Length: 88
Image (cartoon, rainbow, N blue to C red):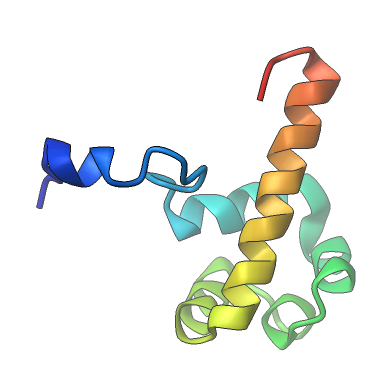
């Protein structure tokens, strides 16, 4: 289902709008690795037999954990852009 223009306009200040959870998890896993990710966010799906699939399942059911992952993602992307000289 394709979002309409009104839907897109309804979240102009949401920095996560249009970014899929799978892309967030893959980005963080690639940037930090499972071990570092598990030490930054102490959740079992990152510390015990981690995988993208198990992480997505857990994060979709656990709002507090998803919030922590999204916040780390935003900080990481902002830091990457600042280090490369791009504007946020």
